[in-house]
Length: 389
Image (cartoon, rainbow, N blue to C red; front, top):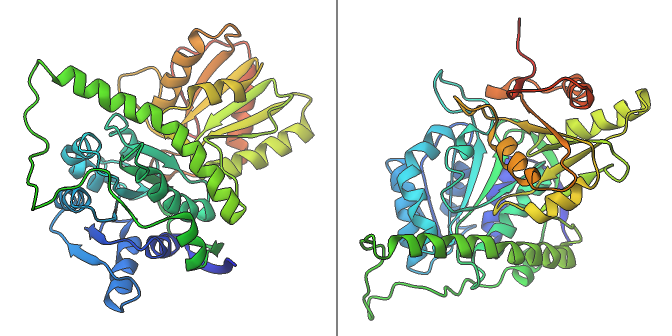
């Protein structure tokens, strides 16, 4: 039976990595991710986790080491944030095409400049096109569960892709929550030993990651896209299998009070819990019916599931926690506008940015968004919410 304990979310993620019997951890510290790999170093040092811990000299080296260890057949984990993810950038694009199922925890933090150590989604959005499967946690329990799920999904022979688990920095990473930590036997039932479908072998030497000229580069990119898109089937299957073992069911898209909603807010990450409270309060105060849809899966983009969740809503308000400089919309806003453009229902879509650089996101912010989304006023650009005048 799982045991509910009070634990910092970062440490719970580390415990999940231990329960996964991870073979290699290669990491470099950076706020607010440091507690994850710091605790893993303790678990390796005291013998609780039988793994190789590689204290590298940079995040670029961390991902390089992870690619090598994963290609050699080791269950591999690392973690980073913000500028660290930016420094990994070159290697992040290589890992999916080499089919290395690394698990990466990202304690999401704003990118510089100015220097900011607090949460938004600018780091993950800077590498949204790298080809990784991307999951978003809403709370500490989900951060823990999604870490186990990431290994199960990425290592599936039909997938063999790296997976990132996005955990809002400080908002989740440094909070102590009551979390159900599973027993080892439960995890072993859900997550079998890693058997790589592709593996480097010194007895049968091969080369990987070689030059791809104009005659084959397009085909290789299309193959990578096909694999990523098809992984959604495995994600759903893994969610169902997780529920069968642990009793907690996840979906690629989660809905809250959308059945009769005229206005639906779409978002990702930990602000969903504040938004759900705002939905409840707004429905008590107004005749206007509002609901919430949050994406658990960001890549591959769950287009069909999102369309189904939006139903017949007249207004869709999309929340981004990243500003795309020089663009009229945020990244999630762009995706949903593109998706709904060809929809026969064609709801009104408005886009909002809030919570940048760790600024507080309140229930009143969401109530303002509900009002704005249902208004007749046209919106040319993504609107900033919570800006001090």
